[in-house]
Length: 497
Image (cartoon, rainbow, N blue to C red; front, side, top):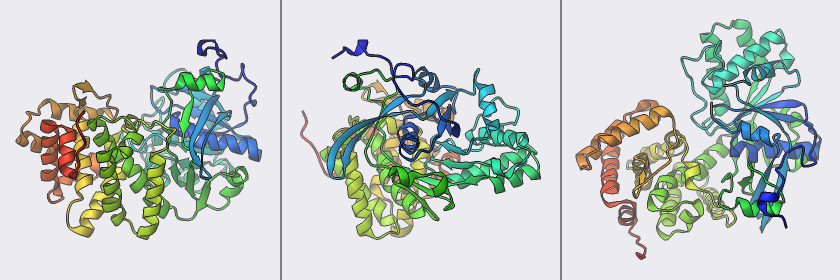
């Protein structure tokens, strides 16, 4: 067996892979999730259903991975590990549908803009995180490119409208994958807002509404990402180097709320994929976002500050595991409208997926943009719990408190690699730099954070008792630490080593 350093690099030149297909999909986002979920499915449709579709990936931010993607000619490996048909399975697929990556912030802008003129282009997919579908007032049509994802899409669609002279057949099917409620509706609303702001005319607005189909969608697959802790072992097994290898679980579900004619254009059933095209995705989304994603976001600051690094460690841990189980069963499920037995079965599956023995899902990979994630995934459960029970959900509140302390950027003397919007990081930085370690200081900091309506959509100080309870936890966490504070809260303790 060759040493890893002697292995060939995965690309179209060194390996026999399919020729590039017509670029019928424009993808905003080059991250692990889209590549292990959407592109993996598109690749399966190409290979098993003759879909014959290439994906051109656009980097939505100035920094990203398209350079690395192009070094491998868009080819990379998806490694699926977990339980399939009741059996522990591990398998890998070389995904070949990605044709190229573009960075519109540099020399690739002309190529990016030219995508609007491709007659074969049919689909747009995206995952720019929960914070990505947002209106940025300063975006202008003449920007190269616009700052926001909706701004980029609006400008690109306008270019397409102009080039094809309003041809109704050149509209696109747009399927965002960001985990916000009714993501397609939200994206469409902002694109229309830009069309009005930029004065693009009633004919373009009509074309946007009539020729283009904005779908709401729900995505479900746990994707830990690049297996940095065992990449050499994996590359030795594969027999080649792959700097874009991505690990995911076996389970996948894609729910698309859209017209039934989509089934003809997306032949997912011919590739054996778990894709549902439905008239109303609400029940699927609410269950998944509140339980699976909500549990992920709730456990992230708690587990990390406790000293645990992976989701698997967290759910197996005596204290953290009991905390997250209680949060799901006692505080999330009671706020949902579906039958409780059905929700508990789904929760059982979620915990089993969290325990996946093959996957090291690092909680820090979940921590990106945690403020907007908490708003989307956890705040609705908190608000609904208060509405139904006239009291605060203790564990969700503790998770919120832990999130505030997480943004202090310190774990037992080691810096935390915080990743969020610049405004969020700046605000937390200023607040924590002025914290004096007292309860009064904790109350001041908490009041300032909870009062940021631009983050939460409302002033959370108006929720009776929330600021006081959160501040008490913040003070305890900064004075006692996570282990002692959580063990007091849960009544559980573990032996000290």
